[in-house]
Length: 505
Image (cartoon, rainbow, N blue to C red):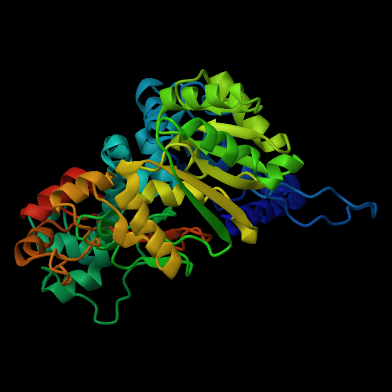
């Protein structure tokens, strides 16, 4: 994107230098491609846009020898029904899936061609899913899948148009009558793949002909948790949908960072208040007024109850959860970012993607329901190589999950085996008779088959593909994957049907 902008700027400068003489000349046209970042909530959208807009290039002297200010490299804007598209098109469009669809569907073209389905298909070259594992869960997947399908359809049409020229196909109808295997080969690898699959064109082809290049859209899936232990996991679905993807992760993927200090306290109704107040007030950074503290609760009602406990213990704090008015939510996040020693009571709405410096302490007033939420909560501290502390208050019904996590953290291994597909560890235990079975393992301790023959056949039957550019995902504590797209089709086996319900790319 930066190279594209530099080329456009050089072209504009050359035209300006040529003056009026160049007005009548044929000018090469540059298509300005954009990036789309999808996030699960507005707070993360705003954080992404702020980070993009803060990117600056090196400063240099101007014509008079004076030092210029650093120039903004790219621009970003958050788009939704409350924030319509700006007059000047941003380089990076940031939106929730539902917010973007509201603009496309309900604006009626009022904001211009770019903000239509056709405009999005033509101008968006890079598609990034931030917190991809969440965006591909049932709560978000309907809107997310519609957007991905929008681009997948356009990717295929572009490749087909090129193939018509290369192979002499007369019409779209002729292509549609080809066997499915040849169509999939065309979408994934163009003319060479079709010929390798056995396609024989009606006309004689030049043996020295060069085919392509074909349109490639870049897809990036970024998340701190992308489980791939079983066939139906999000990471497995992405790998099957994008087999040519480049996977990027750190050594601490799905693990607790070694610089995090963990404390575990079992509580009940009679000891909870004292334990919570002690956990917050005894922290040395809180006492020094330097480190920030996050206190996690299970839901909005529980967060309000925790707030009352802290207020009764004379602990100044702010509260952040989705049931609060938007103004209060924004004020709470602003206080957390700006006030040294701030304490914020929150739900898991603040567990993903929130990037605030100097969060030294995470307190779980309500223990996480599963290992995935646990990883995201503790990931708010000890960022960028800093140290941090996590104090986990747990009750008797949390004991099984706590014991598993304690063992894994003490051994320094990834927590992925403790992930639960339905995001409920207790439900997982009930299915196994109260015995913890690591994810991807059979009850007898043997490694489970990731996909049976029925599952493999179901996955293979429905595979469809539209190829896009390989990419690198976001670094850091999480895992990113980027790549060209093959859209995983509908498996007809049991696992195929389950995957279709949960994750279909």
